[in-house]
Amino acid sequence: MHVPLFQQALLGLVCIALATISTAAPTSSACQKLAGLYGINPILPSQSSYGALSTENCQNTPFAIRSGGHMPSPLAANINDGVLIDMSMFKEVSYDAAKKAAKIGAGQRWGDVYSRLDPYGVTIVGGRVLDVGVGGLILGCGLSYLSDLHGLACDNVINFEVVLANGSIVDANEKSNPDLWWALKGGGNNFGIVTSFTLSTYPIHDVWGGSKAYSLDQLPALFSAMNEYQWRHDKDPYANLILQAFTTNASIGAFVNMVYLKPELSPPAFSPFYSIPTVGDTTKLQTLTQMISGQIVPSLPRVDWLTTTFKPGSSAYTQIASIMGAAPELQSISSVESGSFALAHQPIDASAIHAGNQRGGNALGLQAERQTWFAFDTAHWRADNDKAVHSATQKLHAKVESITKKDGSYLPYLFMNDASYDQDVIGHYGAANVQRLKAVQARYDPDLVFQKLVPGGFKLP
Image (tube, helix red, strand yellow):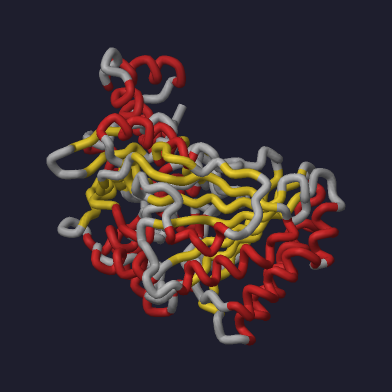
């Protein structure tokens, strides 16, 4: 029986994963067991025949790559009639105190990463939900509670270890393959399979923070407070927050998840919110990991997101708050089985963009100014309601963009980690960055394996 080299090479990657997670099962032993189970002779990247993968072009077999599987877009982390490369066995978390760096396997989730680094009193610029996978978040940009201080998650990658389309394994960093290093910072799954990330660490452990809960009738006041918070001339980079409002469910209401990255009680950075009446408050001195663990994550099976970006402003915020509380599209969403909607208001300071530029830049095309990354999140129960819910959310999205374009606050950036499948994320990085990304693609994947055979995720336009 002829077994395509692609399948043999994939089994070789599995062998490497087994060897990295089990000291009792060396690579050769693991491969022998797999060969016996599947009748396939594994080809390791160290073998000369592995290079034949580049001429086989994967037998035109479509495939998907999954880290944590958090992204809901179809085929982003799954595949029909193809091969799913599940990275979950790449679980390394190692800390180098001398280099102030941590090496993280691409299959890790942020909760395990943070808990493994906590004993050292350090953390990294990573996700705000513990169950999210490392790989997709970093390759899509990665917004963090540390971003105003140290930039985005992708900006903090010292080195990517990458399997290219021709089967070779390369490092991408400031000195080795620097063009690929730049492209992977926001370029998604278009250039290779990243197996590990080496990230800068920071001595942040004890913080003040938690969630303040509000009734939905406080939404206008919360938007006003957010505008004041974002425009403070002395904006404190140690302060970070996100506003979420479940506007189709008054029993849940709205939350402001806030954190001050020092163990100081009720810091003045959040003073615009302190006068707004709450219905619940979990803010206290705790570890950063404990604070993040309080994030609410919906458990419904059908999920969709859309995103837009704009500059903060009182006029736009007043109008958006009104829409988010009374638009007829909210009724369309809530009328389907278990239909729910939540907005996410994410303030980004110019300091986050400056920090990324100082670390070699990224592919995102961000303007270095204060801005809001706004997300429209929906969840429901039945697949046959997907189109109706998506259409209603698109209409809400269009109304918000109409407001921001009319008053001049609209910004073209789309945050990949919050985008829907039909949004042209990379096209919004700007023409110059798109051309630069295509040049990197032509160098490292000239046959467009990841462009053509990986249908999920966000492709180069």
